[in-house]
Image (cartoon, rainbow over all chains, first blue to last red; front, top):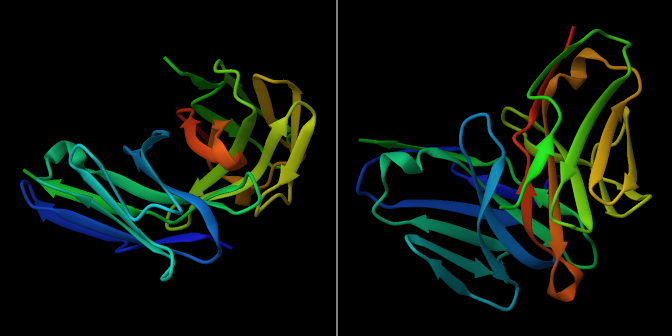
Length: 111
Length: 116
């Protein structure tokens, strides 16, 4: 059973546009994290937001968390061709060490 | 720089073989994980370990076992490989943060296993 599920499954945009990806989860969490994966490689951590935070920024990334709706969004502003990758949300359920990932959003940024 | 190393990038095995996937981290992290990644299914947790000789099942442990004899090494074992275990296997480690949670996982580059 997947804790996090991303939406959309795939997204294609022009360079310079903003990209928004959404994540929903099922149970109470300690934190939510976003990761990036370039084709066929390991995942790289982008940003973490704690359950008592509502918004967080890191460079061109903006993450929001709505615990009442059990959802999060990742916004990448002014996207670049190099942002082309898969993006995953991951959650740490309250009371455990299990980090569970969603199915991911494939982002394609056209130059 | 932080490093998680998986022993093989590509591996081809035959049905019924015993397969060992090795993972080593150099960051003194307590927690280590094994995931498998299949198209359209994302990452699914097979097993994780929060200390030496300690292990817990993830969401899909059937057909797998693990070993953690030393803090830096976490091995995934396929006792008798089957074709449905063909997949990308990803190892990760993490520090335990505030509230005893994982705050940042560091991943290896993955092992693409093909079982014929």
